[in-house]
Length: 191
Image (cartoon, rainbow, N blue to C red):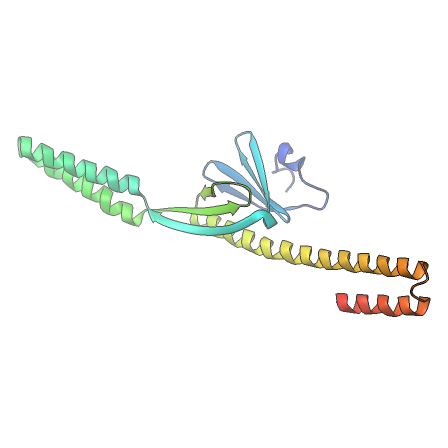
């Protein structure tokens, strides 16, 4: 898989970081690793740790541009009908209706990612399956990273507490037996 990953992306990966999936989205290539999202747009690269992503939502909206084009074409058709009253005007009106009605069924789909520190959400457009997969993967990795950090914080606080107990033992405030008892209690509480 590493031969598919560009060198500039490969070079920014940490030793324990692996790319889980690559997404080909409109204008972007997004690499989901076990730690963060890395997006590449032309030569620009940005990355977002999963714990900095505050929310991720999926949106599906009708294409307002196509509806507007359809309405404008209908207006032109009506205008032509008023001027010439021939068959061409009806063809133009029908084409306008097709645009307007078709736009209701042609959905503009995107995933919006809110990142702490960024003013605006990051919109990713693309294929429905790609967007669904991105949404699922980010949500899953946010949970995994949060659980990992919670475990790491618990382990760090337990280590610090044991160090403090050792200092108290070394100063003579605790006996070796009291130290071992308290240390065992801290380790049991960690599980």
